[in-house]
Image 1 (cartoon, rainbow, N blue to C red):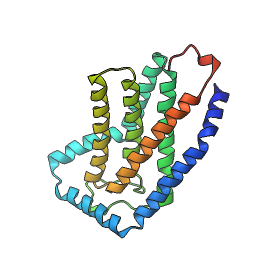
Image 2: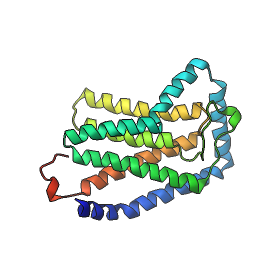
Image 3: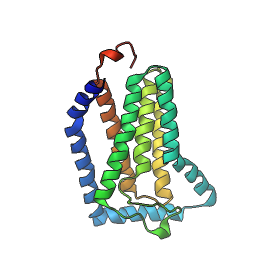
Image 4: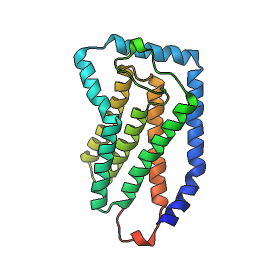
Length: 219
C-alpha cells in the first residue's frame, strides 16, 4: 500500500501546489483591496455592535466545534469507527483532508501575514495571522468529509438531513469567528474554500490508492 499511496500522492502534487498558489494569491489580493478592507471592517463592526452575553456564550460553544481539541477528538473517533468497520478508504480520505488543510492554512497564513481584526472589535483574543481562518477551513474539511461518508450509506431524507446539518455546522463555525472578532468575512470565506478544496483532493487521492493487500477491505 505504501508504494501505491506514493504514486497516487505524486500525481496530486501539481494540483495541490496550484490550489495553494491560488489561495495565497487570493489572500494577497484581499489584503491590498481598500474596498474589501472597508467591507470586512464593516461586517466585524456590525457583529461587535450586536454582541450580547447570551449570544457570546452560544458563539463560544459553536466556535469550539472548530477548535483543535474538538477537531482532534472528532477525527480520532471517526477514524476509530471507520477502522472498526473496515472503511479504509474513508479513513484515509479523512486523515488526508485534515492533514492537508492544516498544512495549507499554516503555509498561507505565513505567506499572506494578514493581521487580525482590531482588538476593540474582538470578543476573544486570537493569536497568529488572520487569513485564512483555520477554524473555518478545518471544520469544512472534517465535517464535509464525514457528511459525505455518511451520505454514501444513507438514502432519501436522511441524506438531505445529513447534508443540511453538515453545511449548517460549517457555516455556524465560520460565523462564530466573525462574531467573536477573530477573523474577517474574507478570512472565513477563504477558510471554507480551503477546507472544501482539500477535502475533495483528499477523497480523489484516496480513490487512486490501489493495493492488493486491501482488496478484501471495503471503501
